[in-house]
Length: 293
Image 1 (cartoon, one colour):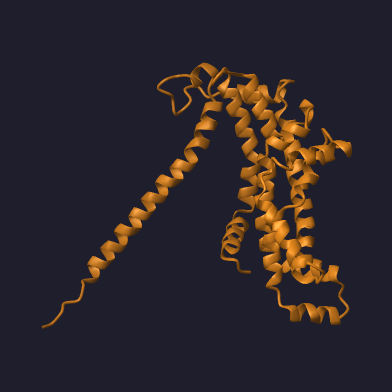
Image 2 (tube, helix red, strand yellow):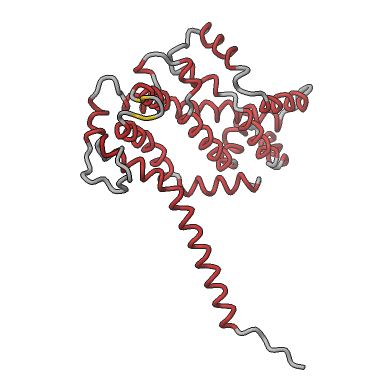
C-alpha cells in the first residue's frame, strides 16, 4: 500500500498560521507593556479636571504643556535638579561598583590566599540577608563619616555588589590560565592583566552588570529617602514620592496631570540609555543568561 506524502501546501499554511499567531501574541504583549507609558504621557498633556473624566479620554481633548512648564518654573518642584542628582548618583554608583566589584572578582578568580573559598561562600551568603538588617549600621557609618545629605551617602554603600562579584568571578574563572601565565612571563603585572586583558575580554558581562546597577540606582527610593534630607539634594524617585504625597488626598491625587508630567520627564534618561545601547543591552542579557563569553 502506498502512503501519500503530506502536501507541501498544507505545511506552508500551518507555518503561516503559526507565524501569524506568534505575531499577534507579540503585538498584544507589546501593547500591554507600552500602554501604561502612553497613558502616563497622555495624562500629562491633559488638564487636572480632564484627568478625572469618566469614561476617560484616551486622547487628550486639548493637549497642553502647562504642567511641563510648571515643573520647570515652580520653586518647590525642582525636577531638573532631582534628575541631575539621580543621573550623577547613578553614573557614579555604576562606575564605582564596576571597578570595586571587578577587582574583587579578579582576586577571587585568580589569586590564591588562605580560606579563599570559605570567604567567597560567606560573601555570597549575604545575598540571603534582607537589606533592612544592615541599613541601620550603614546609616551609622555614613553619619560618623559626615556624609549625610551628600552624594557620598548614596554612592559608596552601593559599591560592594555581591551579585556582581559572583557574576564577574564566573566569567573571569573561564579565562585560560595559560594566556595569563604567558602575560606574566612577558613581564605583565596583575593589574595590567586585569585592566588590559580581562576587562576587554569580559566587557559584555561588565555592560550587563552596569545596566543592572544603573537601573537599580536610578529607581532606588528607600535609601536616598533616609540619607538625603534637603529638597535640592533629592533624587527623582524621592522627589516624585514626596510630590505625590504633597499633592495627594487620601487614595486620590489632586493634581494627577502634574505628577504624570514629572514621571514622564523622569523616564527620559532611561529611554535615552536604552536607545543608545539597545544592541549592547540585548547581546549582554543573552550572553549573561547563557553563561558564556
